[in-house]
Length: 169
Image (cartoon, rainbow, N blue to C red; front, top):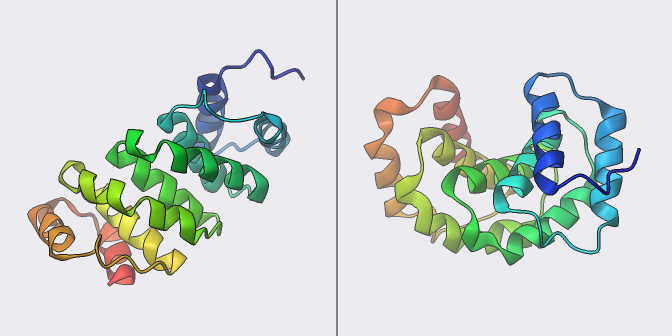
């Protein structure tokens, strides 16, 4: 019952494991959400932990608007510490869970631009799809550089990822 002894990585790993196993435990997820929301700040949470928690809740279809708001504030403060997969998964999580935050998406544009060369096909598809679902126009992100990056990886895209790109385009 007492989550105070849990480190951010503990919360992240447990939530990720339940979601990955397709065994969401809504009671546990609610307790985790309440605990994280009650924290003064999320300064001790690394980008990977923020991203994994958002991904787990989105994958588990567990909508927690207050949790997502708190994660967004923390993520925007350390957005330059995110890697390409963390950005893609974080934005995908918000779009998937219907947590549309234009400020969040817009704040990640420059970070995402700087990581394009490190993105794999899934990252690119998730980023594009998330922006389409969130209805966030980011012409500086979705420029010739983005298109060229996608073309360089065209053989790597799965059918699902191509569908995501189609939805974006």
